[in-house]
Length: 107
Length: 120
Image 1 (tube, rainbow over the protein chains, first blue to last red):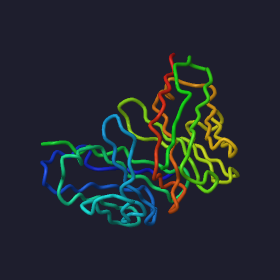
Image 2 (spheres, rainbow over the protein chains, first blue to last red; image 1 turned 30 degrees about the vertical axis):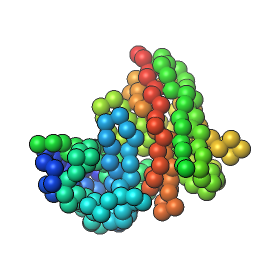
Image 3 (cartoon, rainbow over the protein chains, first blue to last red; image 1 turned 45 degrees about the horizontal axis):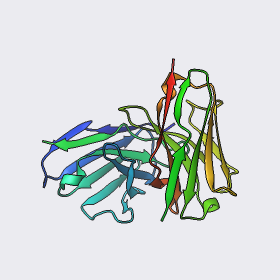
């Protein structure tokens, strides 16, 4: 089973800052990696699929990059609604494991 | 509009059983894989089980293999999760999630979740 690790666990930033979140896989997943955002009391929302493709309706300030074992989610300029928990997930094979999450909170 | 509505959660004793349902609408049911993803209180997401669009393929996390059974009823546009031999560690919000055009495990729509509490 592919294990995903995310860093940092918590990122404390201010609105307007650039956020860089990391996800590392225990073995290559190619580009089969997605990113989800979850706000308190809400279901997760798909942001990025296959490493760098924005899902429908996702603002351009969200971008993803990487391949193999190292991936990055970048939020170019944080909006107030972006403070949330972000999960990466691999779909290289069943099960589609998730990372432990990175919480982006307000500094 | 795509909708996934879970039901069937509740309080059950350790060793007991529960069946979750997820009624879906707004897309061609048999064309997409569906999964159950859970989230223990204050914890991260854990994929639990998935089923292909045809229903021919079923997949389970090691933590539930042999205890949970996933199924789908095309006539009712409903996904199920039969959970047996429940443990305290199964306590979580259970989400139903739809696979996307781009991949069975790319979840583009999620339900609101149903809470399962297993008392020891």
